[in-house]
Length: 272
Image (cartoon, rainbow, N blue to C red):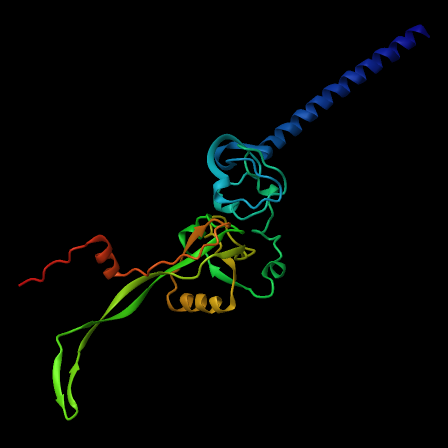
């Protein structure tokens, strides 16, 4: 009986050791398989420039591109991929931005009808200017609209005196020419949302980035002005202002005459 007890004891010890070896081997195999998914070789990723609180809309000045020797799975690699999206958790300064920690839609949580009120409407402006395309404009920002338009100028030529039965009148002939005029027009428009063109289901890797547009909160009459500018000119630039700045700037439109007078530009003498 005593010998049998020792045999059972050694058998139990052997089984325990064998189970431990199998467990360790299994865990090492699993870690080896998961490591490529959890960490990837060094590359340029998007990093938080400062702490970003949960439910915050990421702005272009919140993040920076940095090269890291090891990057976690899901790391954002382009700043434009994260700007305008809302954080789902607190992100520490210097932490790599993970796409799974952001809303899948750009500013998709904003409720437009509630934000408009009774006297404003929402219009879409294609994000074609540099500030918008490169991610410097985010929901909550306030912008001004700048554009340049061709205008017809008239300059007087030497006049001709004509005699009539009623007396003498002066007839002035005019020379017409085109000039460009730059204007700061619609001011202090609030950006409610950024929207992005839906990607096709079969989009290939490396395909062009989807187009974006700004949703602006605007007075109905100003909305018609904006539509005219988009349809007739096409090229519109935005100027970014502080959301707390409600000043309506009184500025003078700029053409070649303005530049000549302001900066004392001397026009070349005509050739003889």
